[in-house]
Length: 104
Image (cartoon, rainbow, N blue to C red; front, side, top):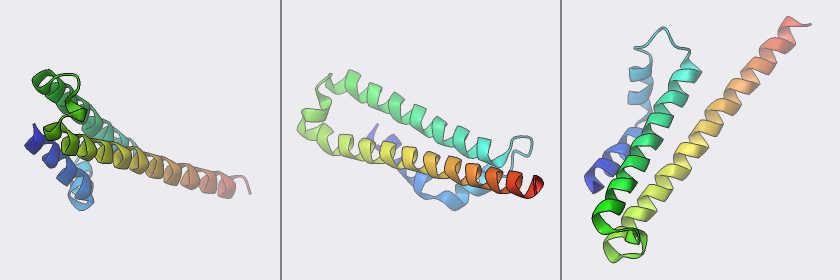
């Protein structure tokens, strides 16, 4: 499970690869692709956390083996949330700019 979480971390950190992968699906707007991709990573992260909980028990975050893993998961979740907000905010600014140009 720890290796799977590290794979998620590498995917998140490798934005260039993500952009290339997302560009392969032409029928979905870019903003939607990015948000869906990040939601998928969040879903996988939650799945892995649940898996660890089943293996180590509900108190896995307080156990020695689980503490570092918990910190990694929290860091990934924070970064995913931040990235989603940045993508969405950037899109909002673009839409407001376009509307502003259109209505002038």
